[in-house]
Image (cartoon, rainbow over all chains, first blue to last red; front, side, top):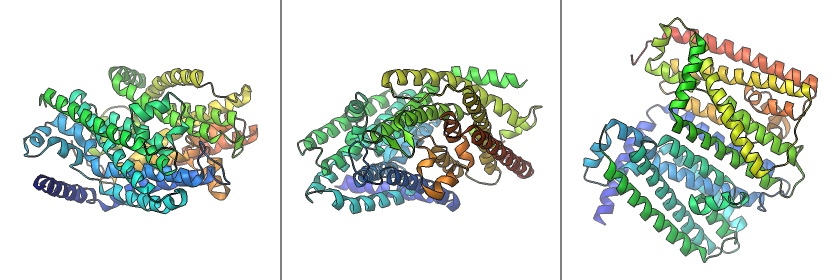
Length: 261
Length: 262
């Protein structure tokens, strides 16, 4: 408990610094925020237009597709809000600043993952969350399903964490972070629509190999009754396995770090 | 002399092969996302916004090819060069700064044309989508002309946006909004005519529409010959207006430029 408190305190302090830095140039922060909301608004408009008049996408109605998109947006924005520091990791490795992080009396992995929240992703997370709360009653048959939905969202965030740890490990091993994180973003963007819209083998890859489908689509599929409750333990086990594997990869990568910078 | 910029960029791209391959992978992922979205949308429909399934797949594939080629450019770093003072080095050289960047962009595009054709051919072979191919020589010529306009349009837009670096502390936010605008209003993800009413009409006349949307619409024969010529003329006019604007900003910016960082 004491350790968790200490880590929360460190996270809050680092988050405050990152927020102060992000809001230093107010006009820049506002412009970035406008860009994020513009992208969000255009995509919603597109789905509204293209699915108007009772049209469907992969068998899902307009409201259901909007729930898929909002769930994607919620997980995606929360991930970026919490783990923006990963985008700066390469700079720490090539400049040698990582050595200072390693010397600190707390986990270097924690610092590299959660050391710099991005406050500019929080407004969209809140808007997406509010939209999810508004859309859920319109599509679900049983209020108890929300428990499974929330569990699967948490599982999605855990999988996102595991994938970010893998990216950090690659940063240590091959000094490549930017392109990998952008590929991760491109892949997650595929989950703006249900993963079932993709043909095999792409659908299988996106579900089990790079578990974007489990992260983003499974929560909504569960709410809609497409995914049965038996899948939840499997998803949770898969999450634990991915987190353990990612942590091992990080430890291995760290053992290869030579501090050559 | 400018040929050397072209050759150097070409050699540079062979040097950073991993970076290039990851960029290509990103382009393929983006294409597959759009392709399968439209595939799913056409499962229960014959036409969407006036596009049949073969027309839409042709739109998506040609749009993807054009975006891979037109948006491949090195000139995105001009703003950084202004901000970190690297521009000073170029100002002292007896070369035109923008002309040299145009040559670098041309090399980048040539490299990407080859890669895009190869990748899309494999994808088309594997997915075998129904397509609506045009064989009309006049339309093919007009499409080629509109693609040339698109290449120049993207270059002048890149320069115009980069000029913000003379005045702003941070250029990334402006660039981010510009990327979002291009991402959607160039028409790569969806045809702009899908939006109804005045919004759809306005979107079809922004400079972004001339990057992908207009060339593909001309290819598909959605405009008659006269309309196509008018669209190309409007595109050229946009290029001239943006170029004049960028040039004025460049002149004013150079007066402010203090080579900070060098």
